[in-house]
Image 1 (cartoon, rainbow, N blue to C red):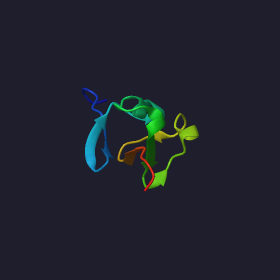
Image 2: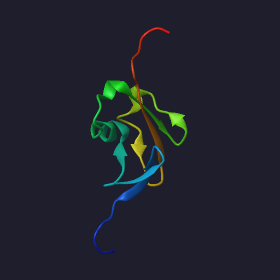
Image 3: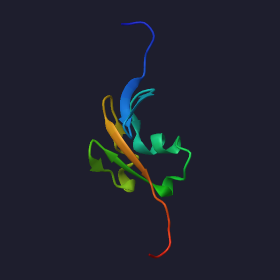
Image 4: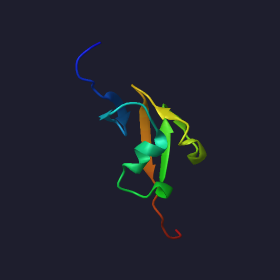
Length: 75
């Protein structure tokens, strides 16, 4: 087929990013500079429960919102 392979484009928190190819959410989150237990992920507007991160694949054109949880005190 074509020449060199190019990555797939996705949108992460409003920014276009290129990934090597489809991957589980768990693999993507592992590349982030924060502990996985402090992160929530929505894919195409739907929050993905952590127990599904190994099963749900990020695909070309997906829109991801990655939110880091921040602890705090009482009001």
